Structures are given as C-alpha cells and as structure tokens.
Image 1 (spheres, helix red, strand yellow):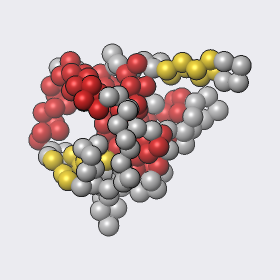
Image 2 (spheres, one colour):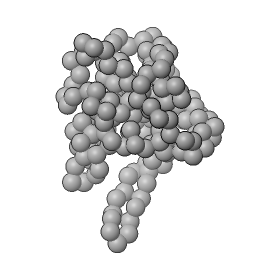
Image 3 (cartoon, helix red, strand yellow):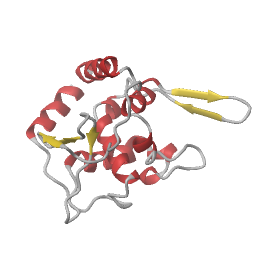
Length: 169
C-alpha cells in the first residue's frame, strides 16, 4: 500500500494536485499499458469494446465501488439522499482532486450544506483499487457502461495481479 501512496503522492506533486489544466478529452483511451488504459494526459480511463466487453479495471471498479462506496453514494454512482452521485464527478472533477478527496476526505459544513466525506487513505480495499473505482465511475458518467455488473470483461493482466498482491501485502 505504501507503494501506491508513494505513486499517488509523486503524481500529485508533479501535477500540482488539481492545478493542471483539464484535457479537452479526458475519456478516450490513447494507449494501453498491461491492461490499463490511459488518456493522452496519462489519466486512467476506461475501454469498452463494440461488443460491450469492458477492460479489467472497469469491471474491478464496479466490484470495488459496490463493496466500499455505494452505501453512501448509491448504486452505480447514481447518488443517494445521503451523498452525491459520483459518476459525473469522475468526468467533471480533475483526477488529482478526485484522488485527494478519497485519500484525505472532505468536510463542507455551512448554513446551506452539511456533507462529510471520510478519509479512505488508510483503507487498502479502496486505495489498492482507487484507479479502478475512478475508471468505473468515469465509464458510468460517460454512459459507456450501463447499470449492473458488466457482462463481459477483459482478462486481468499479470501485471495488474502482481500490483494488487503487492499493494494488499
């Protein structure tokens, strides 16, 4: 887990934690590296084939989101009466801001709103799969993935498997 946090910290310092200009196209996969898809700006993204097959991270993100996030944010990133929809946040919010909120949490309490997002920076079930969750929510927000468990998925790459095992210890 320390390796993942180190990578996130390094990426955040390089990018200025959200002070980086948003790319015009933060959805399209420009390249694939060991089963992971990225935009031209090296931001994690999804890939959905014409037959509906999703990349492993999108499938994993569905599973991890519904394990850790849906209780507050509702199924499929749709939101709830308790917490906002996240499927649009993954598109509209800068990736590094998204990571910052998940890692550190956020508190907005004033006369018109009362929202508290707890920190998940110490939770390996979130941190080891943070990009998967982000990619899944991004695919949902773009309308590339419908509600429910994706029916078809790419195989998990050996590199993804090794990284998961290293992160989880």
